Amino acid sequence: MKYYSLNNKEYKSSFHEAVHEGLAPDSGLYFPESINPLSPSLFEKIEELTYPEIAYKAIEQFIVPEIPETDLRQIINETLSFDFPLVPIEKNIYSLELFHGPTMAFKDVGARFMSRCLKYFNKTKSKKSTVLVATSGDTGGAVANGFLGTENVEVVILYPKGKVSDFQERQLTTLGQNIKAIALNGSFDDCQAIVKKAFLDSDLKNKNLTSANSINLARWLPQMFYFFFAYKELKKFNKPIIISCPSGNFGNICSGILAKRLGLPISQFVASTNANDTVPRFLVKGHYDPKQTLATISNAMDVSNPSNFIRIQELYNHDLKAFAEDFSSYSFTDDETKKVMKDVYGKENNYIMDPHGAVAYLGLKKKIAEYPESIGVFLETAHPLKFEETVNEVLNVNIELSEEVKSIFEKEKTMTICSNYEEVKQFLLM
Ligand SMILES: *Cc1c(COP(=O)(O)O)cnc(C)c1O
Image (tube, rainbow, N blue to C red; front, side, top):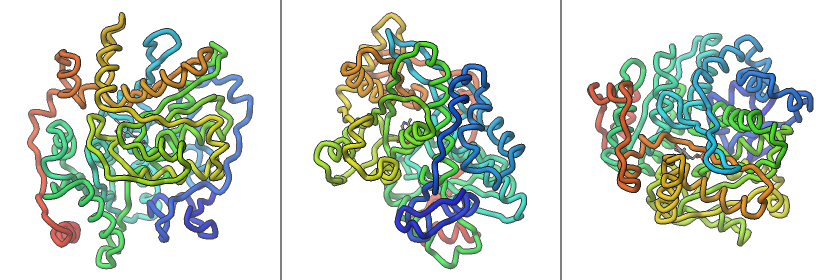
């Protein structure tokens, strides 16, 4: 399979090149040249298949033979070595919990998959690469964990000093081995600007820098697995399925739409956002007008210019009418989010949603009111513990830390503090 740049369809790369480059040289996102629907028999007998078997069938056409079947199966097995429970919350509403991986956020699947793909490619080419990633919190932890101990790969994580939670900082700075952290005196946007500059810096060419954000194919494609897993569990009810994703960079929901193009019977998608409402406004007004990013309690979604939205538009052939058939996007305030966290916790299951899952729940409830004969799923993308302060404050609870989680508070944080691009560059050249 070849992948073209969304800035120029004539420019094409292999999966291998695209994973190494992250973005095409013209800064376009990579997109698969063809999307071939899967055999209907897969969906007919999906209940009999294991998650790794389903995942292999879903992603095979995009990667084999560049990574041969046996190796790809192994990458998938290692990536999916934890649970994806679908938890009933109330009548016809389920939470798909994507936080049972090592860093307790859904990004673990993409990060683990990508790290293993890079490891595979570096094995055959014996090339060393450096993954440089800017993070506002969750991405850094998932990437660090996914790449820990990976041979020939060094990971450098850039985070804004003092602007991530203590827990998130520990996830970035306590691993050691091939993982290095830089605390930047600046904002997340400054971190991103430095990463972009480094990619263009010819002095750093021989470092083989690559990105690990969701623009990278190897992080984006495996996210479609979740949607297949939800279908496997819900098929028996024989009802239309609505899925709501808490959306920031729109990578997760974009992979759900890709799954639908492969034949997965999802009837409606809801992209639920916090106050950063560029896409909901776009669907109403028809023009794309990002505003200043607002800080919210669902901070992993504080994005005003979602980088994957261009891929979504491509999946709908840039046709607003086509969007209207099965895609909606709604925005919710922090007050609405807190209120619904309380309401759901107050029901018989006492279910604790993190602020991101709560935004997705709100979008789902809005949509399912239009289609009451459906079954609804919201993606719970982070463990409530990751947003412990908000959750404890809103629900007046004290979430218990597990022994495994407690151990992170005993380790020492190690990071280098930098104040500008030159200092980061010197660090990379060391
Ligand atoms: C990254 C993240 C999101 C947003 O996912 P996108 O694919 O960027 O839309 C939602 N929730 C949590 C907890 C996240 O870490």
